[in-house]
Amino acid sequence: MVLGLSVTRLLTGFVTIFRIRRTSKIDWVPLAWSSVLFIMQLQYWWAINQLSTLQPTFYFGEFIFLVLMTLMLFLTAALLLPSRGEDEANGLRIYFEQDGRFALISLTAFLVFGFLVNVFGFKSQLEAAWAFTDIPMIILPATAFFLRERKYYAAIAALYLPLCALDVWISLTS
Figure 1 (cartoon, rainbow, N blue to C red):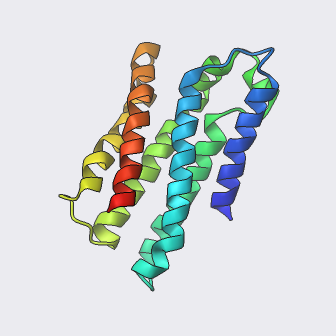
Figure 2 (cartoon, one colour):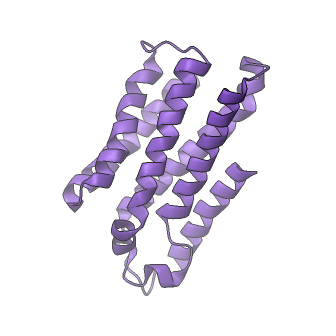
């Protein structure tokens, strides 16, 4: 249910941006992160639906990590894009720099929790292909959060899109 609310919250942000497009300047960086988030939401939703075939029972600790991951996706969606036109009166870039960038920390937390569940819960090997994409996928959003200069955090957003596509491809072929 919370995952569905997360997707709904992200879509509400897209609708808000569409509605205020004539009065507020649109920025590609938060839209790129939103695209990444939407892909991750769908990928996580798919994985959650497949879990019972991989592992029929869970320990409480594993369950807590899965709940925390879901909550981090919701928090990321809630922070990333404005939900009201008033929130974006100065443009999407200003909104992202003041408030939206905090979504990158919750996205990082989601990815860290997922990494921990894979390694300790599912006993996945660190030598596997997924680990080679997960490490930069964890580091880059946190780095983008701390970088204040647009050219740096925008470059990370541009780099992250193909990295996310590679991660999806790896998950589908593994």
